[in-house]
Length: 503
Image (cartoon, rainbow, N blue to C red; front, side, top):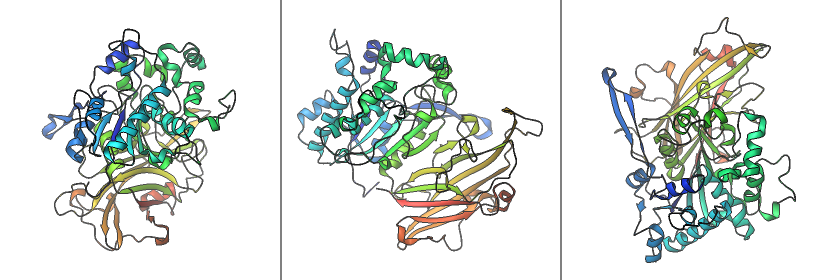
């Protein structure tokens, strides 16, 4: 996207396991960032249609003009060139020094060493590109290496991490560690005591060691209430607003590819990382129905790439919340919302939280998704006004599908006497058109239930929604739900749209 500052992108891969796994990982020149995917979509006349995604590495080159610079190796390229373009992609090959393919008796992998090596790479890129900071893009354990750099290595040196890193994007990172649904905690304790294949790095004791700066450490830690997912605030801290967590919700494909992990971790996961452990509280969080890795993995998914592209290069952040709703006072009923957000022109869903994927939005206690201010977040996505749009369409368009479902139970068991499976109590789609104008944002929104004909032919008319408080610098408006929602969510239920500049 023209006009945006360009910073080098550094990819940090995930856990490889023991020496044999590390040896396999180092054979890949780009540590997996070059892997794409293929699948079949249903085309006209119910005929299967082949569909391919090229890989995030190639698409960043094609879409954003980023350079992939190799001359016998990327480190060798840096050795041979005093200047490199800031719009370039680099792979942190931290595993090379631990592979027996290079040395018959390699060092034992240590995450803190990988984080310090990452700092050296970042410093070289800053010096040679002239860019003040870099983007970190990490898969799985790679996100923990990045957090070790931001939370421990740089603060221990008395340095501000925002002077080195602009944003952190994580795919399926176990920010809260890796836990299992079987064994009543015995498997975790056995892993952490024996350190089998180095997997103790996903337990609380080791995570506390490499995620906590010396100034913040408590002797004998971690404290009982310590949460590995939390990133510290205050001096020499990295803002959570600069962190994006992509959460996978498909355990089945990872289970097929890698054996018993999904059965051990549990269904509410990407096959390896539980949903509740895959994000930093307070960061930007998006859910996609992809597995931890493999053929249908997060990194090599188009869903992951389109979210990554807009987070790094977009210029609008859109927050969608449900507010002012009142659920029927009916005992024994649990209310859930399902959400899907699509952007015009993309063949994928950018964000989806479905009951079938084990991650609906809980509307009532216990486990309610409502915040202290009464807003229930539905989506937090990024858009780019500079991205191509259909000819004659000046607006960015996205659609939010909202479904509300009820579950009836008694004594902890679900009752199905009056149940209609997959039938929502309320369902509609909010179509939003956003256009940048000299006077500010011009936004129009309409429910699909009142749009005549196909959505693609919908031409918004009338006055745009007004900014309800122009003094805040955040464009905010509320859209009432259609009358069909009133018996369930009350007459005052509304969708809150908030649009912020994003740079």
